[in-house]
Structure formats: structure tokens, C-alpha cells
Image (cartoon, rainbow, N blue to C red; front, top):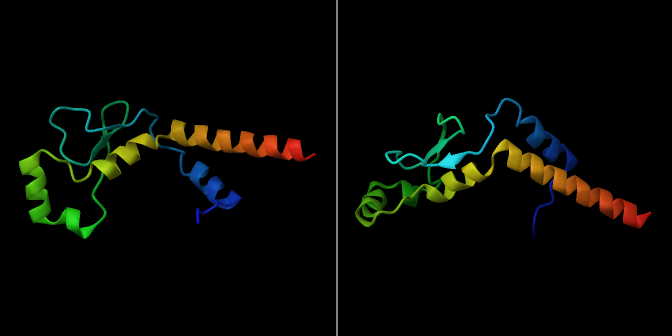
Amino acid sequence: MTKIATDEEIAAIEAGLKGLPDGPWNYRPNEFDDWGIVRAADGSILANARAGDSLRESEAYKARCRQNGLDPYSDVGEHIARCSPETIRALVARLRAAENALSEAAD
């Protein structure tokens, strides 16, 4: 079952946006960026993503990725890049608009 975020969780997510650099955020936008590099709009390194599981962190797996031109961190890194503050704010605004519409329709 899909988890439904509480009002407190949404407020915590919004509060966590303070101080974050504006987007867009990009995954490996520069030719020589290594696996996992997420950059802010100004080009500075924002995050260095990892795979999040022991298989994709193993040296044997990373060696196979190098041989085959694959990036074991792209799933996580690209997801982080998609979650810029503007995107999160837009999602929260859309959620609130939908909640307001439902509330008005129920009245």
C-alpha cells in the first residue's frame, strides 16, 4: 500500500528546502564528472550519490560497469537531480490545490 504523507512530514520537507541551492540540478552534466556527481545550477557539486546497495558498491560490479560503459549510481543520482527545491515546492503546491478542490467539492 502507498504511504500517505502526514501534514507534519510535508511541513518538514518544506522546511528542509531552506538554504538549498536553486535548480535546476543536474546529474553528471560535465564531460569528466565521475559516477554519482550531482551539480547545482551554478556548477558546484551538490551531492555525490551512491548506489545504496552492497551489490552495486562491490568492486567486481563496478569493474563490469566500467567495461560496459554503465553507471551504477545513475538511478540515485538522477533521482536526486529531479528533486530540486522548485520541483518539491511545485509538488506541494499541486497537492494543496488538489486538497482544496476536494474540500470545496465536499462543501
